[in-house]
Image 1 (cartoon, rainbow, N blue to C red):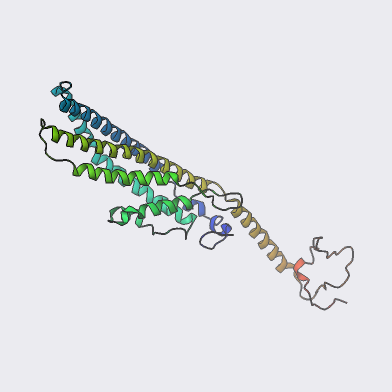
Image 2: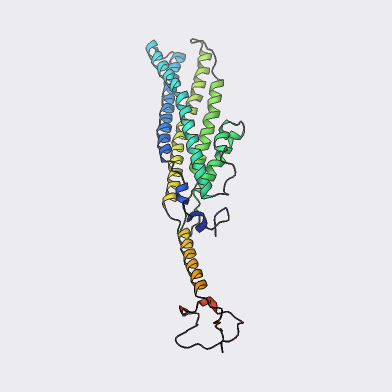
Length: 305
Protein backbone atom coordinates (compact mmCIF):
# COMPACT_ATOMS: atom_id res chain seq x y z
CA UNK A 1 0.00 0.00 0.00
CA UNK A 2 1.42 3.38 -0.92
CA UNK A 3 0.87 6.82 -2.31
CA UNK A 4 0.04 7.63 -5.92
CA UNK A 5 3.75 8.26 -6.49
CA UNK A 6 4.56 4.65 -5.57
CA UNK A 7 6.09 5.57 -2.22
CA UNK A 8 4.85 4.07 1.02
CA UNK A 9 2.99 6.39 3.32
CA UNK A 10 5.83 6.16 5.80
CA UNK A 11 8.22 7.62 3.23
CA UNK A 12 5.74 10.12 1.84
CA UNK A 13 4.33 11.53 5.05
CA UNK A 14 6.61 10.55 7.91
CA UNK A 15 9.69 12.01 6.22
CA UNK A 16 11.23 14.97 8.07
CA UNK A 17 9.76 18.28 6.98
CA UNK A 18 6.77 16.78 5.18
CA UNK A 19 4.14 18.57 7.24
CA UNK A 20 6.11 21.83 7.24
CA UNK A 21 6.14 21.78 3.42
CA UNK A 22 2.35 22.12 3.39
CA UNK A 23 1.71 25.87 3.39
CA UNK A 24 -1.48 26.85 5.25
CA UNK A 25 -4.04 28.79 3.22
CA UNK A 26 -6.15 29.94 6.16
CA UNK A 27 -5.46 33.65 5.69
CA UNK A 28 -6.30 33.53 2.00
CA UNK A 29 -9.41 31.50 2.78
CA UNK A 30 -10.66 34.15 5.24
CA UNK A 31 -10.11 36.87 2.65
CA UNK A 32 -12.07 34.79 0.15
CA UNK A 33 -14.96 34.31 2.59
CA UNK A 34 -15.29 38.07 2.87
CA UNK A 35 -14.95 38.74 -0.85
CA UNK A 36 -17.28 35.95 -1.90
CA UNK A 37 -19.80 37.10 0.69
CA UNK A 38 -19.65 40.61 -0.75
CA UNK A 39 -20.15 39.16 -4.23
CA UNK A 40 -23.24 37.35 -3.01
CA UNK A 41 -24.60 40.52 -1.42
CA UNK A 42 -23.94 42.50 -4.62
CA UNK A 43 -25.73 39.86 -6.69
CA UNK A 44 -28.71 39.93 -4.31
CA UNK A 45 -28.80 43.69 -4.79
CA UNK A 46 -28.91 43.19 -8.55
CA UNK A 47 -31.85 40.79 -8.18
CA UNK A 48 -33.72 43.29 -6.02
CA UNK A 49 -33.05 46.17 -8.42
CA UNK A 50 -34.06 44.11 -11.45
CA UNK A 51 -37.27 42.88 -9.88
CA UNK A 52 -38.18 46.39 -8.77
CA UNK A 53 -37.49 47.74 -12.25
CA UNK A 54 -39.59 45.00 -13.80
CA UNK A 55 -42.51 45.91 -11.53
CA UNK A 56 -42.25 49.60 -12.37
CA UNK A 57 -42.05 48.96 -16.09
CA UNK A 58 -44.99 46.60 -15.83
CA UNK A 59 -47.06 49.38 -14.32
CA UNK A 60 -46.07 51.65 -17.20
CA UNK A 61 -47.02 49.06 -19.82
CA UNK A 62 -50.29 48.12 -18.13
CA UNK A 63 -51.10 51.70 -17.21
CA UNK A 64 -52.45 50.33 -13.97
CA UNK A 65 -50.73 52.86 -11.77
CA UNK A 66 -48.65 55.95 -12.28
CA UNK A 67 -44.91 55.66 -11.87
CA UNK A 68 -43.20 58.63 -10.35
CA UNK A 69 -39.87 59.94 -11.51
CA UNK A 70 -38.55 59.48 -7.98
CA UNK A 71 -39.23 55.75 -8.06
CA UNK A 72 -37.40 55.36 -11.35
CA UNK A 73 -34.51 57.48 -10.12
CA UNK A 74 -34.17 55.40 -6.94
CA UNK A 75 -33.94 52.15 -8.90
CA UNK A 76 -31.55 53.72 -11.39
CA UNK A 77 -29.27 54.97 -8.60
CA UNK A 78 -29.20 51.52 -6.98
CA UNK A 79 -28.38 49.82 -10.29
CA UNK A 80 -25.64 52.38 -11.02
CA UNK A 81 -24.05 51.85 -7.60
CA UNK A 82 -24.11 48.09 -7.99
CA UNK A 83 -22.55 48.30 -11.45
CA UNK A 84 -19.81 50.54 -10.08
CA UNK A 85 -18.96 48.03 -7.35
CA UNK A 86 -19.16 44.92 -9.51
CA UNK A 87 -15.98 45.24 -11.59
CA UNK A 88 -13.46 46.09 -8.84
CA UNK A 89 -15.03 43.52 -6.50
CA UNK A 90 -14.95 40.81 -9.17
CA UNK A 91 -11.33 41.56 -10.07
CA UNK A 92 -10.20 41.53 -6.44
CA UNK A 93 -12.02 38.27 -5.79
CA UNK A 94 -10.50 36.69 -8.89
CA UNK A 95 -6.94 37.63 -7.86
CA UNK A 96 -7.30 36.32 -4.30
CA UNK A 97 -9.03 33.15 -5.53
CA UNK A 98 -6.23 32.38 -7.98
CA UNK A 99 -3.57 32.93 -5.30
CA UNK A 100 -5.48 30.63 -2.93
CA UNK A 101 -5.98 28.05 -5.69
CA UNK A 102 -2.26 28.07 -6.51
CA UNK A 103 -1.41 27.50 -2.85
CA UNK A 104 -3.93 24.67 -2.52
CA UNK A 105 -2.63 23.01 -5.69
CA UNK A 106 0.94 23.12 -4.35
CA UNK A 107 -0.18 21.38 -1.16
CA UNK A 108 -2.11 18.81 -3.16
CA UNK A 109 1.13 17.97 -5.00
CA UNK A 110 2.59 16.80 -1.68
CA UNK A 111 -0.52 14.86 -0.75
CA UNK A 112 -0.78 13.06 -4.11
CA UNK A 113 2.28 13.72 -6.31
CA UNK A 114 0.93 11.79 -9.30
CA UNK A 115 -2.76 12.38 -8.73
CA UNK A 116 -3.26 15.40 -10.99
CA UNK A 117 -4.25 15.71 -14.62
CA UNK A 118 -2.92 19.27 -15.10
CA UNK A 119 0.22 21.06 -14.03
CA UNK A 120 0.23 23.61 -11.25
CA UNK A 121 0.68 26.51 -13.66
CA UNK A 122 -2.78 25.90 -15.07
CA UNK A 123 -4.29 27.17 -11.81
CA UNK A 124 -3.36 30.59 -13.22
CA UNK A 125 -3.26 30.12 -16.98
CA UNK A 126 -6.52 28.21 -17.35
CA UNK A 127 -8.61 31.24 -16.38
CA UNK A 128 -7.12 33.29 -19.24
CA UNK A 129 -7.14 30.63 -21.95
CA UNK A 130 -10.22 30.45 -24.19
CA UNK A 131 -12.06 27.15 -24.51
CA UNK A 132 -10.02 25.30 -21.85
CA UNK A 133 -11.46 27.77 -19.34
CA UNK A 134 -14.61 25.71 -19.51
CA UNK A 135 -13.13 22.56 -17.93
CA UNK A 136 -9.46 22.89 -16.87
CA UNK A 137 -10.20 24.74 -13.62
CA UNK A 138 -12.85 22.14 -12.85
CA UNK A 139 -10.38 19.29 -13.31
CA UNK A 140 -7.79 21.06 -11.19
CA UNK A 141 -10.26 21.61 -8.36
CA UNK A 142 -11.53 18.02 -8.44
CA UNK A 143 -7.97 16.65 -8.32
CA UNK A 144 -7.13 18.89 -5.34
CA UNK A 145 -10.35 17.81 -3.63
CA UNK A 146 -9.53 14.12 -4.04
CA UNK A 147 -5.88 14.51 -3.04
CA UNK A 148 -6.83 16.40 0.13
CA UNK A 149 -9.47 13.92 1.30
CA UNK A 150 -9.05 12.65 4.88
CA UNK A 151 -7.54 9.24 5.48
CA UNK A 152 -9.12 6.19 7.05
CA UNK A 153 -7.51 4.04 9.75
CA UNK A 154 -5.49 2.17 7.13
CA UNK A 155 -4.09 5.33 5.54
CA UNK A 156 -6.27 5.22 2.43
CA UNK A 157 -7.91 8.38 1.13
CA UNK A 158 -11.65 8.44 1.65
CA UNK A 159 -14.01 9.03 -1.25
CA UNK A 160 -15.84 12.30 -0.68
CA UNK A 161 -18.97 13.57 -2.37
CA UNK A 162 -18.23 16.08 -5.12
CA UNK A 163 -21.76 17.51 -5.36
CA UNK A 164 -20.69 20.87 -3.95
CA UNK A 165 -18.03 21.11 -6.68
CA UNK A 166 -20.63 20.36 -9.33
CA UNK A 167 -22.95 22.99 -7.87
CA UNK A 168 -20.20 25.62 -7.75
CA UNK A 169 -18.90 25.05 -11.27
CA UNK A 170 -22.28 24.63 -12.99
CA UNK A 171 -23.78 27.76 -11.42
CA UNK A 172 -20.65 29.81 -12.12
CA UNK A 173 -20.59 28.80 -15.79
CA UNK A 174 -24.34 29.27 -15.97
CA UNK A 175 -24.05 32.81 -14.62
CA UNK A 176 -21.50 33.64 -17.33
CA UNK A 177 -23.72 32.29 -20.10
CA UNK A 178 -26.89 33.91 -18.81
CA UNK A 179 -25.06 37.20 -18.28
CA UNK A 180 -23.90 37.21 -21.89
CA UNK A 181 -27.46 36.53 -23.06
CA UNK A 182 -28.78 39.38 -20.94
CA UNK A 183 -26.11 41.70 -22.31
CA UNK A 184 -27.05 40.85 -25.88
CA UNK A 185 -30.65 41.82 -25.16
CA UNK A 186 -29.75 45.38 -24.16
CA UNK A 187 -30.63 47.92 -26.87
CA UNK A 188 -31.94 51.51 -27.08
CA UNK A 189 -35.68 51.64 -26.42
CA UNK A 190 -38.47 54.16 -26.32
CA UNK A 191 -39.81 54.66 -22.83
CA UNK A 192 -43.38 54.94 -24.03
CA UNK A 193 -43.29 52.18 -26.66
CA UNK A 194 -44.96 49.09 -25.13
CA UNK A 195 -43.11 46.64 -27.38
CA UNK A 196 -39.74 48.09 -26.47
CA UNK A 197 -40.58 48.08 -22.78
CA UNK A 198 -41.55 44.41 -22.92
CA UNK A 199 -38.17 43.62 -24.49
CA UNK A 200 -36.49 45.54 -21.70
CA UNK A 201 -38.44 43.57 -19.11
CA UNK A 202 -37.36 40.31 -20.75
CA UNK A 203 -33.72 41.38 -20.57
CA UNK A 204 -34.11 42.43 -16.94
CA UNK A 205 -35.59 39.05 -16.03
CA UNK A 206 -32.72 37.23 -17.72
CA UNK A 207 -30.24 39.45 -15.87
CA UNK A 208 -32.00 38.68 -12.59
CA UNK A 209 -31.75 34.94 -13.32
CA UNK A 210 -28.01 35.31 -13.93
CA UNK A 211 -27.66 37.22 -10.65
CA UNK A 212 -29.43 34.40 -8.80
CA UNK A 213 -26.92 31.94 -10.27
CA UNK A 214 -24.10 34.22 -9.09
CA UNK A 215 -25.49 34.16 -5.56
CA UNK A 216 -25.59 30.36 -5.54
CA UNK A 217 -22.11 30.13 -7.11
CA UNK A 218 -20.64 32.50 -4.50
CA UNK A 219 -22.14 30.55 -1.60
CA UNK A 220 -21.02 27.22 -3.09
CA UNK A 221 -17.52 28.64 -3.61
CA UNK A 222 -17.40 29.64 0.06
CA UNK A 223 -18.22 26.05 1.04
CA UNK A 224 -15.56 24.68 -1.33
CA UNK A 225 -12.90 27.07 -0.04
CA UNK A 226 -13.79 26.31 3.58
CA UNK A 227 -13.88 22.54 3.16
CA UNK A 228 -10.75 22.23 1.03
CA UNK A 229 -8.69 24.51 3.26
CA UNK A 230 -9.83 22.62 6.37
CA UNK A 231 -9.02 19.23 4.84
CA UNK A 232 -5.48 20.26 3.99
CA UNK A 233 -5.00 21.82 7.41
CA UNK A 234 -6.16 18.56 9.03
CA UNK A 235 -3.78 16.52 6.88
CA UNK A 236 -0.97 18.84 7.93
CA UNK A 237 -1.82 18.60 11.63
CA UNK A 238 -2.69 14.92 11.94
CA UNK A 239 -0.24 12.06 11.65
CA UNK A 240 -1.17 9.48 9.08
CA UNK A 241 -1.75 6.27 11.12
CA UNK A 242 -0.13 4.09 8.48
CA UNK A 243 2.78 6.50 8.16
CA UNK A 244 3.33 6.43 11.91
CA UNK A 245 3.21 2.63 11.98
CA UNK A 246 5.50 2.30 8.99
CA UNK A 247 7.98 4.76 10.44
CA UNK A 248 7.99 2.90 13.78
CA UNK A 249 8.56 -0.42 12.06
CA UNK A 250 11.39 1.10 10.05
CA UNK A 251 13.06 2.39 13.21
CA UNK A 252 12.74 -1.00 14.93
CA UNK A 253 14.12 -2.77 11.88
CA UNK A 254 17.04 -0.38 11.74
CA UNK A 255 17.87 -1.01 15.40
CA UNK A 256 17.64 -4.78 14.91
CA UNK A 257 19.90 -4.60 11.86
CA UNK A 258 22.50 -2.57 13.71
CA UNK A 259 22.44 -4.98 16.64
CA UNK A 260 22.69 -7.97 14.33
CA UNK A 261 25.76 -6.58 12.59
CA UNK A 262 27.37 -5.67 15.89
CA UNK A 263 26.83 -9.05 17.58
CA UNK A 264 27.10 -11.49 14.67
CA UNK A 265 30.12 -13.81 14.92
CA UNK A 266 31.16 -15.66 11.76
CA UNK A 267 33.20 -18.19 13.80
CA UNK A 268 30.24 -19.37 15.83
CA UNK A 269 27.63 -20.72 13.45
CA UNK A 270 24.46 -22.11 14.94
CA UNK A 271 22.82 -25.06 13.26
CA UNK A 272 19.09 -25.10 12.99
CA UNK A 273 19.19 -28.93 13.40
CA UNK A 274 21.35 -29.04 16.55
CA UNK A 275 19.46 -29.50 19.83
CA UNK A 276 19.87 -26.51 22.05
CA UNK A 277 20.09 -26.25 25.79
CA UNK A 278 17.47 -24.68 27.96
CA UNK A 279 19.56 -21.56 28.26
CA UNK A 280 19.70 -21.06 24.47
CA UNK A 281 16.23 -21.64 23.02
CA UNK A 282 15.85 -21.50 19.26
CA UNK A 283 12.13 -21.98 19.01
CA UNK A 284 10.36 -19.61 16.64
CA UNK A 285 8.09 -18.60 19.48
CA UNK A 286 10.96 -17.79 21.88
CA UNK A 287 13.20 -14.72 21.51
CA UNK A 288 16.79 -15.43 20.59
CA UNK A 289 19.59 -14.97 23.11
CA UNK A 290 21.19 -11.54 23.20
CA UNK A 291 24.52 -13.16 22.33
CA UNK A 292 23.17 -14.98 19.27
CA UNK A 293 21.05 -12.91 16.89
CA UNK A 294 18.02 -14.65 15.48
CA UNK A 295 19.05 -14.34 11.84
CA UNK A 296 22.50 -15.84 12.51
CA UNK A 297 21.02 -19.32 12.24
CA UNK A 298 20.53 -20.27 8.60
CA UNK A 299 19.47 -23.45 6.95
CA UNK A 300 22.14 -25.60 5.41
CA UNK A 301 25.02 -24.57 7.77
CA UNK A 302 27.18 -27.36 9.24
CA UNK A 303 26.45 -28.43 12.79
CA UNK A 304 28.55 -26.89 15.52
CA UNK A 305 29.37 -30.43 16.76
